[in-house]
Length: 329
Length: 107
Image (cartoon, rainbow over all chains, first blue to last red; front, side, top):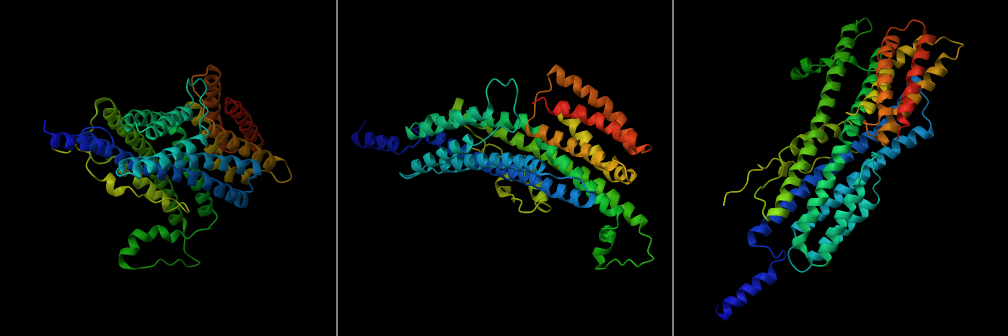
């Protein structure tokens, strides 16, 4: 081999951050970007659930004022604790998003520091995480498993062993999938109970003439720019019946939307786990584009944001709409 | 959904949906309203306690309690939706919520 060709090969190896083939580096970069997008939706998913838990406090205050249901400090603390635990999970997802983003941008001399800092942040967030479900008999506490995996990533990056980071991220995503799987039923229940309590209070408002029933006439009047009018002699019985029907139909729709979102979020995490596992074990990952199931998650987040104050808005819709088909060579 | 969590949710929501009617049926000058509110709050606390600390369904003791709650839920549904004797309804609610408390304590 001629000296200039040897020099070029050595230069290539020195410049290759991952010490992979060029194709494998592209796959690792793509995996990290996809994980960042999936994590972004997970941040918003948990953030929305946290808002729902906080909104339960507002509903309880309404019950106290309208129905004289006691709402003590103990009850408020119970709901606040739930909201905080869900926000911690959002913080974990955000740290994972930051790590994934920094990892995908691993180019240049300053990037390793960014990745190291992001990995450290993930480890810190995980240390503050209390398990939402206290799983009796579980052989390994899930947050510990996630923390150990993230700690491995931090160590590997600091020791410039990025090539081993994919297996460590494989473990992290697997642990995250297991956590979500264990808690998914609690997420569904939290959403459904919130919707049910809100509906009950809304029905009370209908029964006590506390709302404008003419809103149910919107679909008929709005296309023509017309407004409803109720006089003192108007019989609102049928309007109240229509409002009650609307409550039930909307309740069913809201519950179905969240269930679909939680299933889709878990599927998105599972898909990412499969891809990263493939990268970690086979050294390649042909899929491009984020899991398409994330669109369902984003739709639910967007809908929930219309009735939850300060809800996060979806930021991954563009990436989620991209096809997940492997790129052609 | 885990049976235990579902049981507690079902009880909490059943009482929530019928709370207004139950209140209206409470007799003035009695402890009906106070007792009703005590049980409703207990049901809510049981539910949120459970959702904060979920637990396995494969615990035999838990399964027994879930079966008890299931049986009482059916009777409770009849009682709260067809309010006759409010005192009897509150007694039924109290019994069901006590079982719910035992279930929520299995954490």
